[in-house]
Length: 146
Image (cartoon, rainbow, N blue to C red; front, side, top):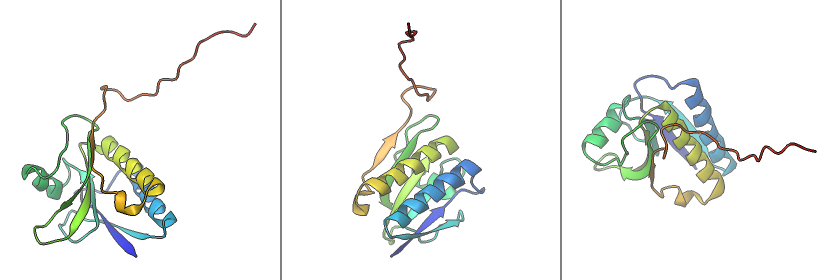
């Protein structure tokens, strides 16, 4: 069984996004599924459509039709299943407001592929950062050894 992942931005992805796309491909391979990544903004058959809202005519069209639920703001993302074409089968759409949001979405997708049955990948997620700056807070009590 093989799937087609179509990156639908006008421009080629940044290096960080290429790394995240390869992670998704490797996650599928660990599940015994071959994945082919195609880079084309054209609307053509695929199992996954991946891109950013400001760079993809296809995702802009779906957003204008109110078929993509993407929250406003930097780094927002959505992963959802929908029929991209009226007569086509459903596909998983991974859309983000910008490159960082897209990378977060791709790593979320890779984690889902690794941790749950493939038929559950289509559970929708729509999110944006709670705070304007994402950071990791590590608690430390700063006690010095005696």
